[in-house]
Image: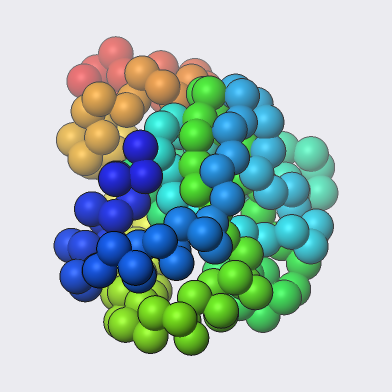
Length: 189
């Protein structure tokens, strides 16, 4: 299973077996059942995680108690509350498994140690941050410039095999529409 992580990293940088061993020693394997949290909003336990198996929703709980789903993360994706992880601030997001999942996580202390042991990981880290920024920018532009229907069609085009993992409540929250409106969109497609 850890081969997925190595393959993911080696798409950007080559690793020796010694470097790979250093990475594995600094990560922790975590198994979460459906509806268990990796991270709870306003806590102080931020991780960077790589999904080996499963799916997650990254969301906020607003003052009225309703959820706003910001992102979904699936197998072979990275996920992190960037500000909390890098600046040791309380977490802004909940990260919850939407199916039984397995992930590898690393905390900030171990990541800093890993950068000293395997300096070329900084190059990979920069690529990860660049990718995260692009995804955040794309999400913001989609919300501001596309209709709910366009966002739905794009989502099912990008993730055709993932939509069955996401219930209508979570998908409607992600799209920013009511369950009823999502049902209308689905019927028309």
